[in-house]
Amino acid sequence: MKKLTRPLLLVCIMVLSGAWMSSTPDNAILFDYDISSIETFEWKAGEDRWSETAKSRLQNASLIFHENGMFTFRFPWDSNNAYLIDGSFKKHSNGSYTFRAFEATSSGLGGNHILVNGALYFKSGIPQATIHFASGNHTGASINDVKFKEAAIKKYSAKVNLH
Image 1 (cartoon, helix red, strand yellow):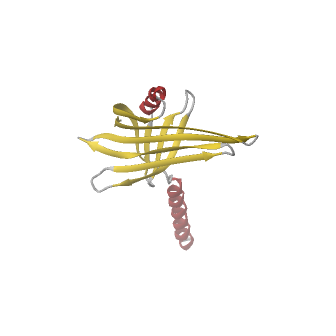
Image 2 (image 1 turned 120 degrees about the vertical axis):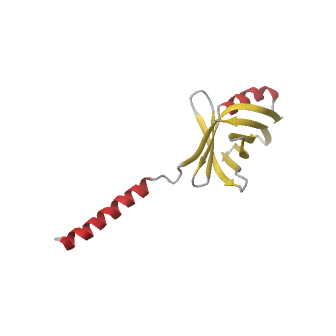
Image 3 (image 1 turned 90 degrees about the vertical axis):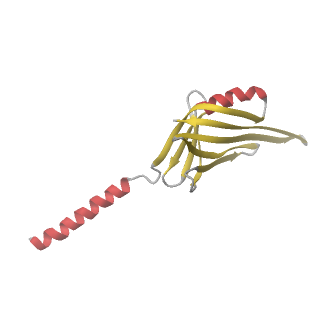
């Protein structure tokens, strides 16, 4: 009986430790910061009337750094939905992080893209970030041999405090 108990105990330990290890998510969160305030906001391109909406969305955005090196920028798309853009980040020897996230979609008539990049750093222990945001869309069609094309872009840079 003793010879059978030892291997059975070893198998149980291996199964339990395997189950524990597999339940640890690959994208466990390292940092999840919300923007607490915007120190600077520089509108670089786009209709001026879009800047306040962009600033409001930024004010309610989050920067999420996952342990596996993945970065997610989350911001409100409308009152009911959050928009997630995924990318990656790199840690630097000075304790700062640079990040980049990009998304592009297209259809037969056009497409759009969003790019977010920047840096996370700690000033007197307080997390801060610089964020560069660019988005654009384009549409095009040909009707009766007449070509139609339209494009819009917006870009801004900001320095923000995080919590």
